[in-house]
Image (cartoon, rainbow, N blue to C red; front, side):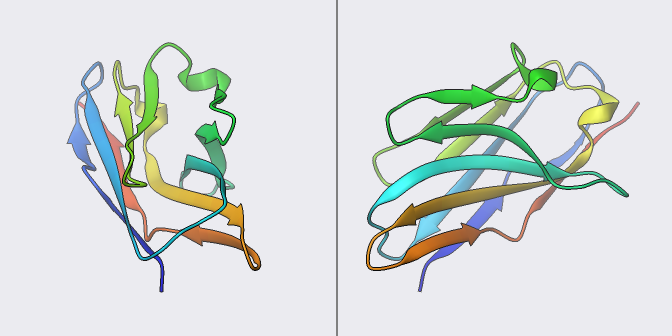
Length: 117
């Protein structure tokens, strides 16, 4: 059973920084992408940043230059968020997609990030 667990969310003032972590447990093979998504109240879930198996990294335009996604060899991933803005307030989810014996799409439970003075 694969589980993803996010941590590192919290309340921060505009211009501040947070580092989110996503710990993956269980055996995972055939990963095609690892990414972070977010969902603000009343809005649809949106992609924030993703690492594709080729090593390509994509960011939402709204976070380019401010956020940085990374991963380690243990299938954990991170999101460094700098220069945070109130509009970054959302629940942040980590996601792993891939295909082995079957296609899979794993999600964490989410961690709240609130940016406010």
